[in-house]
Length: 351
Image (cartoon, rainbow, N blue to C red; front, top):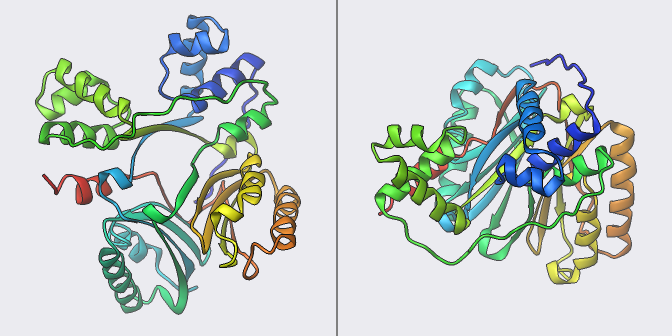
């Protein structure tokens, strides 16, 4: 789908507020104004303007492990060049079962998801292959699956665009943030209903969630406070990077040297995290994936040449990384940040 972008010129204050909204999505306008040193009314006016131009969307992301997921999954590969996209759209709901992110351009595709067990992942993979070969949209042996057991892996960054905006806007603002209470917690059925509503409808007020769940607004507010304080949900804001001039999204899959587990790659991981281009980074001892955003192909080459040269010099890589490049402005199919089916299948089904 081709999208026509109009570049929006932002003032210095608008850049600051835009960054603040992405970096601290949990803050109220009053709290954000105090953090940025900008008047509350100005923050509200700017936020309304940014929202009016659809420059970002707000999403509530579940804590995968704590709602019962065991595996973080990535799938990439190729469709058959004569594949029918209408048939593919019909099958998106079935693919991987708990997929929350997907995009394709030409024959290339990428999806991310999470599953309750390895058995569930295997079941979805087998069903996916059978169905897609039946309707003729997939090649034989043209898909790669990357599976990260959450207890043995680390999610270093998850769709965090704040470093990217900070560098893009050339801002000098502190990056410190608050951590939630990550102790194990059990939710009642009513609390799960509110949890599901927060994931599916992040834009709704407590009052509207109360109407949907049949609870009082005070009850919903108390449950929401409990959920957020215990870190069961992470609120993120995703900017429309195409409107900021970023044209490329790169997915990278790396096979790591078995002699170089995560603890021995700390300097390499630190170098990778220093790059604001990397919005997602998930690593295990043997494999690693990244999603990165670039203004153009030249910026992509310069950034990756530096990173991969370091990794090769330090013998971190088992083989050449696989990189898939997508346009941020043009996609044949895309589905970004749809988490409520995952919550329904993994979390709502258990008492």
